[in-house]
Image (tube, rainbow, N blue to C red):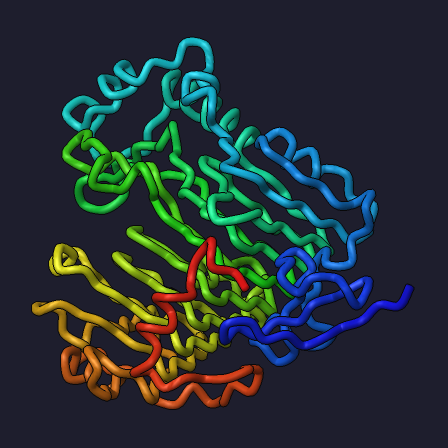
Length: 427
């Protein structure tokens, strides 16, 4: 039997299909590999994941336990995991993780700023029990993805709720066609020293790429789903924040392509590089391509970049009318970053100026060319500098992306991305 690699175009989407026979259907997303030249994940040998998995390493899972079991044994062979339906990592509820003696009402009483103050981090029995409860949740909701793996949803309704995919120290991973509802942290920590009035801090991103290389994230939907921030209560005058990020690429991760995804209704959405002090691990890495993604109802970090050489093109950014006060920025320019933002489309409501799209965290050059705001060509760097004359950005990131299959006219991007991005629309 001879292996064949063929280029396939379906409904305007280009993919490579690793076929074990000529009759092998190109419509099987689990056997597709990243096209040559499609972003940073195509660098070198490219990204094929588990497309060549044999029968013994091909799994169909319907529960979170089955999913974690399918990932658990790593013998180095290509692995294909097909997800059917929605896997619930927290089906037992938060009570299943609570340490004996933990009492949230007691926690609130002990650490009320009127009692504890705002100058000292919390400590004591209830904080220890909260931490133990949080550790139990972490053990249950994290799934570690090994090298040479493809995870793919079957059909239009496959997904994960309450779980956190950890692509950690792996190489050659593909994740496609899943709706990923942001994990809900059952046990956020109160930090009275965070800001002027304290804050609740949470754990668990829907997906983390940590120290991994050659990762393709394609046609997924990242969302807060049933638990948007607007439904979360407030304690001590601050929102009881139970969400962290939707996607993080951190700690020396490299050669990542995120294409045709939807990132919806979230606050701190996509972080590339997690610390200004991480030059030892991150400098020269964090090379990420973002193309044909929809960011809608997102407050900030779409992405925020430290150190990374990031190519963001043909994405559509939609700021909703009810976000006017809350919207912070889309592109965060951080320490030693080299962001190249080209031919993106922005749909902004009245009250949100184009100068808010870029935010300067640390001095770093940025290239922003060919972008359109509400259909009009706008120089995003100039718009930022006009709005922030005392904190200007420098133009010219000093490099030009070459790993692209095609870049569309930004005027076509809203329709194109709206029709084809997200779970259930994989080619």
